Image 1 (cartoon, rainbow, N blue to C red):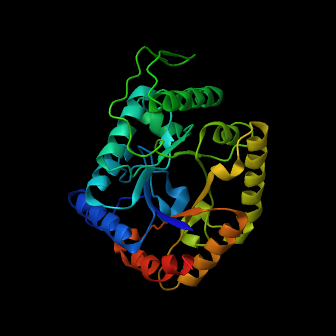
Image 2 (spheres, rainbow, N blue to C red):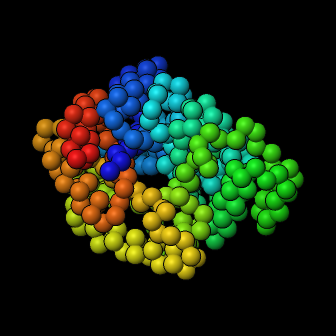
Length: 311
């Protein structure tokens, strides 16, 4: 079982002047505690008060994802780094591949490449980024995935798509991860997203809530979401059969939330959750810890939770 850490908020008491120091402390502690992966969002605004203390108001602090993981690559040694997940219409695909490749090289081959269709219209409108229709976002996502595979295979032939045309997609240096950084597609759509996972991805990702009242709309017992997860895995398996892709090749991941603090959740609850998810076939569980800046939750993972899951 692989355990990851997702950092989803940055409004810490230290403020912007201490943000780099706090991020480095979190990342180094997670690295030393045995976390397998470390992720940040690809959002430009926070997600709003509906998510309680997990995210916060739209105008709360938010860091750009690729800049942030590049910084974190420089302060860690082992942990894998990723954006959960890249919004496919924020950046031209060629530039996106170049950015992701650069970070992989500078980190020594320690990256994941997470991507999805994107959804948050308010941040796009707020910063003057065109928001394509739902249908067009998925078409652009598929073209982006095709470009990623082509550029990471070293093929420099022109790419001619409906939305993107690349005359000479050179990518040098190539990523150090072999055959390339694992491509993770986030989302649960059964007709489009999971079909794209089966055709193009190395990993899938689903998001579930947690039983903490302070998490707002995400306040849901873990067990109440198990049928949802089983259904999504079944659909993914069928898509794999349809395109003759071995289901076992795809790493199954989940993002969820936890608050390890007196009066909230315990290490035993988290260990039980991880065993339940492993029984379903999930291999990589990524936790968003809203109080991660306190560092104590990371210490609990390192001393109690991660060792228990290695048995």
